[in-house]
Amino acid sequence: MSIIVSGITLPFSATDGDAVREAVRRTGLGERSVLGSSIHKLSFDLRHNNLSRVYSVELRLDTDEAKLADGLGLPSVKVRAASAMASPTGTARLTHRPVIVGFGPAGLFAALVLARNGYAPLVLEKGAAMEQRDAAVDRFFGGGALDLSANVQFGEGGAGTYSDGKLTTRIGDSRCQLVLDLLREHGAEADMLRRAKPHIGTDKLKHIVTAMRREIVALGGEVRFLSGVSDVLIDGDKLKGFTCENGEAVPAEVAVLAAGHSARDLFALLKRKNVSMTAKPFSVGVRVEHLQADIDQGLYGRYAGTPGLPPGEYALSRREGERGCYTFCMCPGGYVVAAASERGGVVTNGMSYHARSGKNANAAVCVAVTPEDFGSGDVLAGVDYQRRIEQAAFAAAGGDYKAPAQLWGDFEKGHVSDRLGRVEPTYSRGIVFTDLTKVLPDVAADMIRRSMPHFGRKIRGFDAPDVVFTAPETRTSSPVRILRGDDLMSLSLRGLIPCGEGAGYAGGIVSAAVDGVRAAEKIMELYAPLR
Image (cartoon, rainbow, N blue to C red; front, side):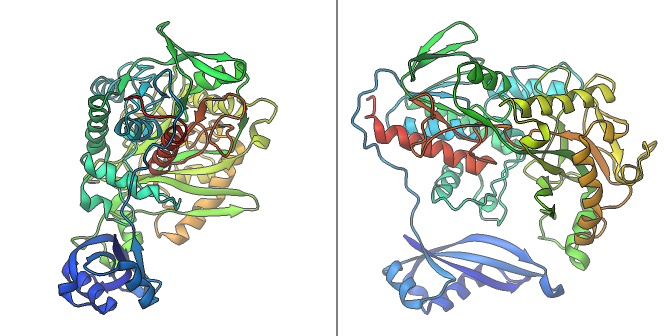
């Protein structure tokens, strides 16, 4: 174990060594008592018009850490237990190896935990392996055809691979540290993980994902790409297996369903099979692009451009009654990307590379919508709602996966834009100026129109007239929840563990990965390893 000393505020000119020395001073220990130290987290504070560094420092000691922390009685000093993977405790015998449907963050981490514990999992992934997927995505970004099996939504690593690798999360689960440690083992840089808002970068995350897959395979697991599920095999209320799109039957008495938020064909299949599901809220909106320099100026003021400061990032929100408008998936120095996964629909997303050195910043500006907005009579009404928006965007931009766009100043006034200002859009397939109120639902367009001035008061320049809106952002989260009990099992199909973002139980890489770890632990609790 070790202790974390948090809330160490020092001048911007301070060094990591200064932070460690201050942590030692606060604990009342001598430096000889410290076996090792590291920076746990680093953020920056601009309150009171003064730029400071705020550190959390980890100290590894030659004394009883828990006794020390209790004796100090300081809320800023806490024991940090080493992250540990659960061990198998189940005794039931598996007839077939566990199956994992989907190889995004939830499926990836479930597979890795199971493989490390001797369960030799079989992963069925609808999309392609990384090399093939990456080539197909590059072709599509460059104007080529959409590959339905290899795109921003489907393929090795899931949708999270092409969204910057953001590792921020609001959940307090102790498994979060295990997830970060496993990412570090497979190539994530320690410097990135110690930031208050850690990220990896799309370019780095691709290699980390493939390194994790190689370990899964080396430990006896198997990953079958281009193996989407076309049928679920059921006997009464028990899972018996799956049929893949290539016709292959895969037996299974236990499976983790981690298919991601865009697995629309699978959602429709589960509905036909009477698997318990419900429609759930999600959000729709636009991608907003600013010059990164303007965001830095709005956030850092006179300190903008100071060497050592990371590109500015933000999270903004506003509520009207029960409805919220908020920014999501903010990408400093990033790019708006073509994220379609169906023919005839336009979808946008955002990503940054590791360096975050692009000229623009972008984020989703989204408005929450509920089953009352899109219809509660059908469990898949949210899917239909998303699809209508995406198809309207496709038509409005001319039908070649260009994206409809409008400057904020013109959106506010109800004018179709006719020229760009200072911000050059990064959506690589090109934009077409149009009236975005013809693409977005009224409830989203109206809420965005009322919220942008509020955001502009939070960050100066956020609502500048030449800010670019590119639409639509529809895949913020799953439009369904596949219902499960406290034991994680489907309410209607024993042996099926709905998991991750697509099942409606996570939002982002870390929370999805944590849910995947929980799913693996449930299998380990019930069944003995195969070896």
